[in-house]
Amino acid sequence: MSKINFFTPIIYNSPHTFKSSFLKKADNYFHLGGKKAYVIGQTKNKQEKVILCESKVSLFDKIGKVASYFTVITPLFMLGTKAVLRSKHHFKIIDPRRKLEKNIDISQDTVSKIEKLLPKILGKKDDDAIDWLSTGNNLVFKLKEVPNLVFKVNPTRTSRNRFANMIKAKRVCLAHRLDHLVVPHAKQFIVKPSLSSPRMYAFIAEENLHVNPTTSEQQELHRTHAIKLKETWKQLAKFIALTEFNDVKPVNIPLVPEKKGFEDPSRIALVDLEHMESAVDGFCGSYNKSNGLLSCIPAEQIKDIVKEANKHGITLSKKLVRAIEKDRLQEIEHHKKVREFHEKKGI
Image (cartoon, rainbow, N blue to C red; front, side, top):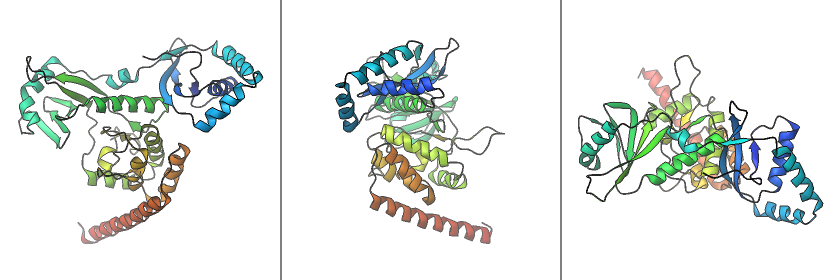
């Protein structure tokens, strides 16, 4: 795991004191790219818990900083300030992988069961023990004797990239306090067809969040809880900008059912993180039939989400945004007429 050195910037999401605010400025003054340490809480021993996360610095900012270093007085002042303020802080690095894998226990009996069922799993065949959720490129299923877990495997491609993306997602959500986004707890494990076989399959065991898996149901839920989801969409926009997550469609961002007694759902689960290739596609949709975030939200919220994208350096085509906004208005009007018709007919 990476370590924090003297020049690693410490980021407080909400600096409450003059000292923490000034430390942030001094830290950023020397930062020319690489990892930043985001403070997410404190330990019982008053150590600050931090998540290390990559951070980019624009070329313009780099040039400005490097030029100021030649003034000598400014960097010496900042260096002294940084040394004094940092001396009173102690840090503990939090491993996002451990956070992701928390409470996911895969027994040897479960692994043995999957090994036994492997020919049927790879062949997408039915079995009394298998509850299929998807038989597309990625095979997704539950075992009836392990209902609290969902299993995923891609027979032709490695699942390691997907799991690495899940760790990345957990890291970003923790670092930036995206508490309306839920990355299901998960763990990766290897299954071999036989002891002598050189072939290995990387499976992911994922927490079963009991979300509704259908696109139409998720679209209806998104419409029903539109007002509650304003902050959620804003956080998802930030997540897309930071990770380039681009497989955004209703079925991949389902609402998480809240426990009885809680308010209406306002959190979404990130259940398919295989594709992190283009932030622009994450907002506007792409060739792989992904809707894009702008096509998943109410038309009146599109401008706010575009502003959020711009804030994080993502430029979206104004022409394309207008076209998406027009399509959303037409789609919403169509659904309104359908609902009114159903109500009138008592359907």
